[in-house]
Length: 124
Image (cartoon, rainbow, N blue to C red; front, side, top):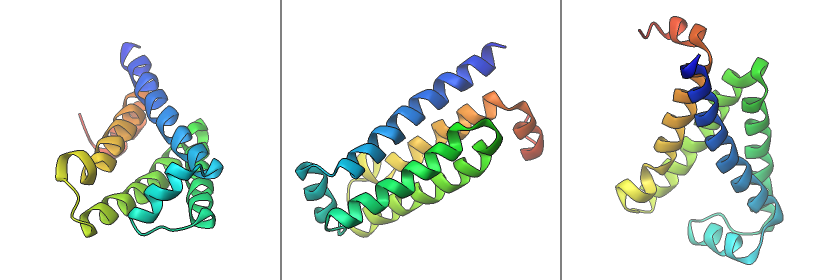
């Protein structure tokens, strides 16, 4: 029972981060647009498109019946972030691997919440 609660806590942290990121992209304040432009994603429409995509993936992750699908889609989104930072030569541990850290927390929380996922992955 404690592992399920820990899973929900980890998932909650990831969900809070992803929702904040999506909402900031949808609102598109100047600092978000400047950051996007600095990594090659210029303009309000790009920020809002990424925000909408991330919001949809996060909502799928939140709903228990679609959480695995949501986790797969968020993983793909985070992979794009990792690739972008690699392409730009950003620092490894602070920028490049940040998406990996979020992904580990996301899948770890999901695995603790869903023991059946552990069985499917054959992790003991």
